[in-house]
Amino acid sequence: MADFGFNEHHQNEIINYMRFARSKRLLRVKTIDSCFEELKDSRLVEETFTVDEVREMLDGLQMVVRGEVEMELINTAHTNVLLLRQLFSQAEKFYLRLQSDVSELENRELLEQVAEFEKTDFTSANKMNQEASKPKLAPLNEGGVSELLNKEIVRLQEENDKLKSRLRTLESQAMSALDEKTKAERALKDLQRTQGEQQLCSQMKEISSLEDTVAALKEGYERSLSANAASQKDLQENLVTAKHDLLRVQEQLALAEKELEKKFQQTAAYRNMKEILTKKNEQIKEIRKRLQKYEPDD
Image (cartoon, rainbow, N blue to C red; front, side, top):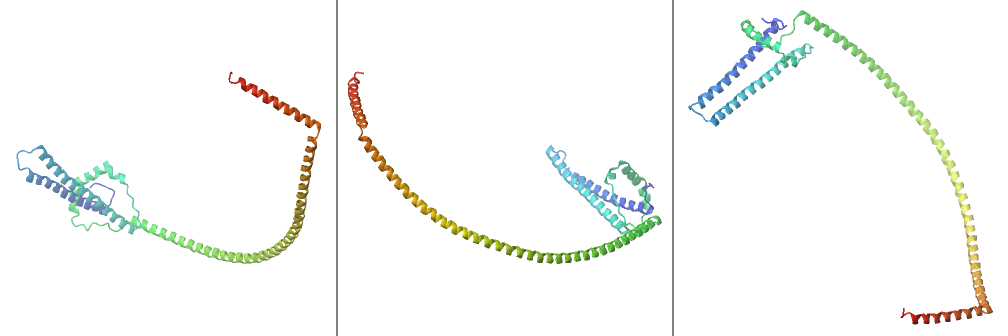
């Protein structure tokens, strides 16, 4: 019998699974054969067929065969998942962690070994395991594995005890830290209360000082306002007086200008200048009349 690195019990379990897979495979092959036989019996009753008829028969056969093959592949995948579920479930009971390497599923060398095992050893193994029990992984009873599991359990228990001890230490430290935090909060509240009272007293003094300052400023502002009112009244009176004086001076100036003009008109120079201007105006009028006579000729 080929050696896959398992003991006799596990080797028998592999043979049982291969027997199951082989029976399913043979059943699906028979189903596909029946599809072809049904096509022969139902459609191949005439001697000649057209191209369209042959194409139609092949397309129908293709759909049927494809459905059967696809169903078998899906069923095989689901069956493998259920088998892995059984293996992992039984391994967890003994605190084992199984791992799989999907890349090994396409290893041609291992696949050829499985095919060779099925050809050479399947028949003999089938006879030896006719009275085998229901396919199920039995508990691990090997001495080496049991000892390893016991050591692992002891180690885990010791680690668990250490973790519990550390947890108790951490809980104690947490309680101490919580007490210190409570004391610190209480001291902080007392300090805040004391500082609040001192700050309130200081603020009251500052408010009283500010009130005195505001009262003094108000009194000074009122005195300044009274003084400004009196000064404004004096300024208004002075302004009115200045306006009256300005009007009087303007009237005197206007009278003086009129008097001066009157005196100037009575002088000989003014009369001579007036006569000259009168003569010039008459000469200008005479020249304009002469020019008007010559303008049509031009």
